[in-house]
Image (tube, rainbow, N blue to C red; front, side, top):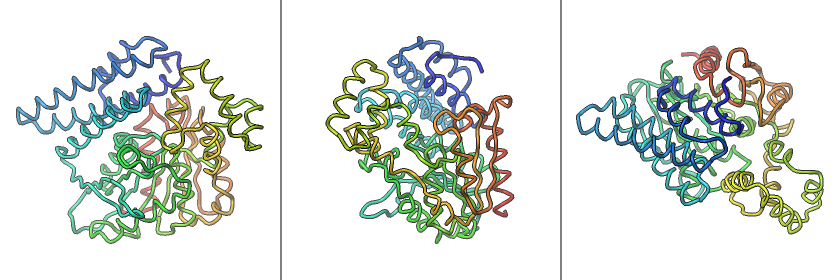
Length: 396
């Protein structure tokens, strides 16, 4: 595939934005001209140029609204939300990231208000607070239908939920919903709720909230988990047995491996022996030599609710699903297995092999343009294959 950037993270981000064109969350010309303005190795330019594109498209959305063109306005708000999200993901200062995230969410909410699809904002009871979510209805309000519950990953936006699951579900006559779990989107940015490994305590309240609705058939609820959601969904499905079918894209058995493999053996030994102060001191020296790694670590630590690298790596090790938990899953599962998976290589096959429920391991290849984590540049093919499987396992 054409290399837009030497930096692997920026290249992956471009492929994700281009993939979202399939569901109209980006436009090719807007993407290419923005990317062309970003020099190699300049994350600051990434933030400023995506912000500039988002501001311009948002201005066009307001113009369309004022002229009485709600469909054009909705389309532009969706693209603006996508571009603001790209800027937010790499903003170095937390305040800048939060401000850009708020602009992304405001643009998304305007899209939700104007789109032809019925979109309902949800407040899902959760412990002593609520979790925000969105419900998308594909039919009459009194007709119980199949419903897809989309679980995001560690940093996926609500626009990503649209392009990786919701739009495909609606096109096939499903209802769909997504929610911000602890550590995700508004639950993190506005409520300060951090990640938790025991996702059954998140997904069960979500299904409790959905199941009584007259437009939801409680026997036909499917769940999709994307990126780190490929850990959370199997973990939850081991305890929550109202799920008719589940998708993990990709399968994740142990979240921490993608973090720990970056550490030299001396730091691994300090981590395992519990030497917190020495570990953090050695990390601080190493991070001075690599500002980009420092930015990435700060960004990754934030949803875990920690400031210490020792606490971050220690917490990540609790995000692992056991063989006993996998054996408790009863619903059929689809596990995607993309070639060149860069974050959790080999874990899709490990997950599929450990399951005792009916399981399908679904490969995606570089020859198809569908390799890499979550198949970023193959939104069409990915959606066709995943939803063909869902249609086969959850009757219309």
